[in-house]
Image (cartoon, rainbow, N blue to C red):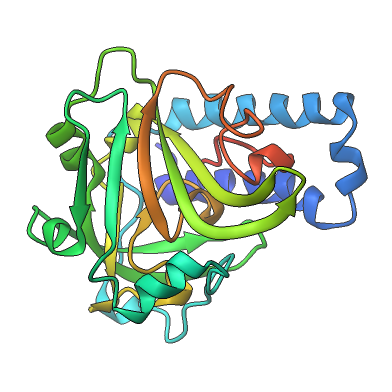
Length: 258
């Protein structure tokens, strides 16, 4: 049987190749419907290939303490330009709460202390960025599946959407903030956690404090930082651009599997 790491490498390179087109002066192409169809077709191939190799429960590789990168580059925003977030950060997020709602039986909100009091998982994993770099870090947080079990998903829930504090651009309708989404199967994967620690320290602001998603079998832009709210939904079509995430609304793949 082929080495699973080689399979992962193949999938990683394939995803990086398709996404890198968007980082190399091809942005005008993204506006063309025929080019979007090519991208979405490639996404379906990525999902199909990964489905052949990886079960829903298969784990991404985990590493030892000795493998942790001496410097872990921060992806995306490094400090949200948002007054409410700045006020929360100034108070060490003591007044921050994670809202969990949508298609759930028991909507709730949780403080950092609440989340820290829940069952936790610690994992040392590799972060693969769409820009082509990788780092290994240690993460601790509450499994997302545990939070979903607490609130109770309704049968029609198919996706989990993450709403974040970082503003990406100013639009005619106001501020466009970062958001992401995952399918329920990926939300319930054992390595999908809401991380509040990195490398045995409180999660730093450049890496998404107070809470970020770790979705270890997908590319870095899927791992939403500065999470403020989680919502269970049946469809992504009516949310912002309708493609399931800020970068997806700008042409990236929704399923960024590696």
